[in-house]
Amino acid sequence: MNKALLLITSLLVISQSLADVDASRQHELMYLLKQDCGSCHGMTLKGGLGPSLLPEALDGKPTDLLISTILEGRENTAMPPWKAMLTYEETRWMAIQLQQGVN
Amino acid sequence: MDGDSTATGRELMRRLCSLLLLVFLIPVSYARGTGDLGIVIERANGSVQVIETSNNTSLGTIEGLGDLSHASAVYSRDGRYAYVFGRDGGLTKVDILAMNIDKRVIQSGNSIGGAISQDGRLVAVSNYEPGGVKIFNTGTLGLVADIPARYGNGKQQSKVIGLVDAPGQKFVFSLWDAGEIWLADVSSPQKPVITKFKNIGQNPYDALITPDGRYYIAGLFGEDGMALLDLWNPDAGVKRILDGYGKGEQKLPVYKMPHLEGWAIAGKHAFVPAIGRHEVLVIDTDTWTEAGRIKVHGQPVFVMARPDGRNIWVNFSVPDNDTLQVIDTQSLTIIKTLKPGKGVLHMEFEPRGEEVWASIRDDDRLAVFDTGTFEQVSTIDAKKPSGIFLTARAHRTGL
Image (cartoon, rainbow over all chains, first blue to last red; front, side, top):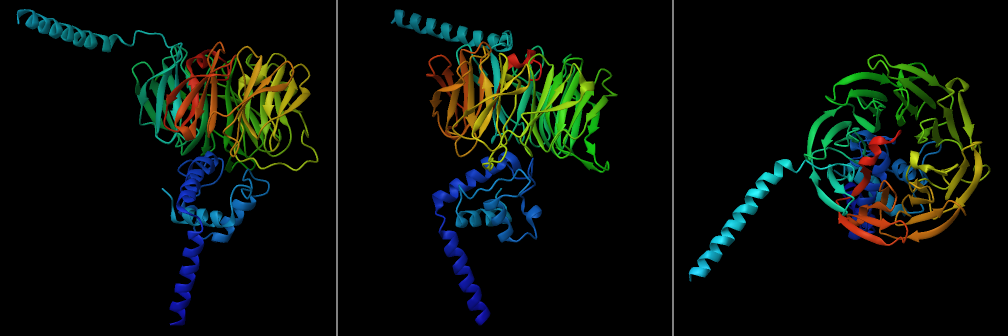
């Protein structure tokens, strides 16, 4: 019972935070993902100068790690910090989309 | 009544004639030159559009080229075939007169660009995965040579960037992961002779060769500077230029990797994008030292000289990719800022420089500007356009 409640609560929290990114912004973010992330990771996200972002490549990587990589970048690599252009919630939404697969 | 039927008869004849004319015109429509033609990459659709610059129109679209994100192209010396390098490792030979795909091979898992040899017989492709260069016969697209970019202990293969052709039937390219420049003599195509230059700097991201084919310059992403190789004196090795141009200053994020192309040279100056700085760097090509820097609107991506060298046009990385700026090469100042639309990805000058074509990705169109008045003179629909490649490249070293 408690477990179920916890699950429902966390689902509610997730859907609430995902809902913070409205539909038109989601559309913009998806465009950014394919076109701009795609300039290094490939438009189908299978990798280029940057590594593959397909679900199988991200398997086992925690969402928080993806979020911090996008927001803060990776030192000594070509991955820039995107925090000037993205909020935490937007980044989280994108990270979840990547884990689920966007194509 | 009679007059009417005659008129109808005449109309019928006229229509028949034009129909017949059309039928005859289709096969002979190849009988035109290609000097005013070019292709535009439609990155999301896997298609290329054939354009002509005499009247600034589209002649048609060729589909089926695979994943064209970040695609580029070179031309056969007769200007009829475009060799298109796709992200999915596809090498496609496109007949721009017949408007079809002549041949297509998938030659790797992930490629980045290519070059055509001085004699026009070989086309080389630089690959990310597996890292290296493959060389093909331009007629058949049959594999001629494979050059894996092995480095370190010999087990790893580096991603290859900055592949250009050079005089003396050579290809030159750089190894992103290894920090090396390789010079491949393909005079005996099956047995390329490779000269390796090691420790040229961290993460070369792209390279250019000067229009005379003498100097190869690789930009470094991992440090402030560029690596210069004098192909007339390769024994002198690779020299570092512009070392530490951003010393002591925090780098700005680079949201898109800049490009280097041979058209960065104007007179005695070379104009190149700074990395992580909103500046165009000016290099004196006599001494290869810094001759100035110009503050610009964002992180420069393409820095291209108009063919006469009087102006430089610059586009920018996201989030500033709605802007084009024009630099005057005499005063080294910005003389014009244009806002043609979001996602200005690429520019290409017409061969004598009176007009420049720009891809406006997010508006799904191409814009053509008069380079004297900066007025837009034409706009053409294109689906998510990126690279624009005119056939004049066929006769230029390094393009």
